[in-house]
Image 1 (cartoon, rainbow, N blue to C red):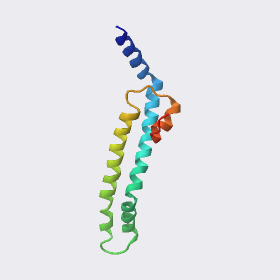
Image 2: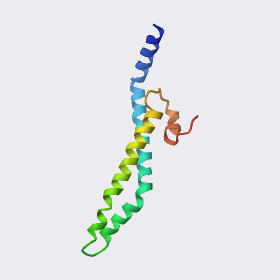
Image 3: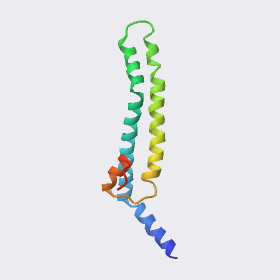
Image 4: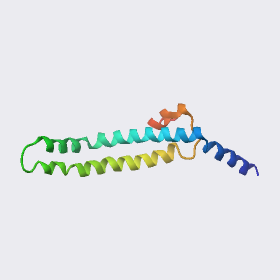
Length: 109
């Protein structure tokens, strides 16, 4: 009986408006973190595809094809990193606002 009561109290707290807002905020922080990480790893591809716009000539469009792997790399890093970090740092926890550093940088307090 105590386990059911404990679970019911946790569920009520977990579904509260404050916890939902904190999960939304921490999700936004994780999206920002992994979007920047994706750009850091694929910036040369973005730069080369931008060069296609600046270069004159008939085959300048070929550089724009480099946007495909650039977006793919950035998207893969965003999706995998976001899902792993959300599962490890946010899902199933009662959060506090001061834990934003742990969620963003992965440091344990």
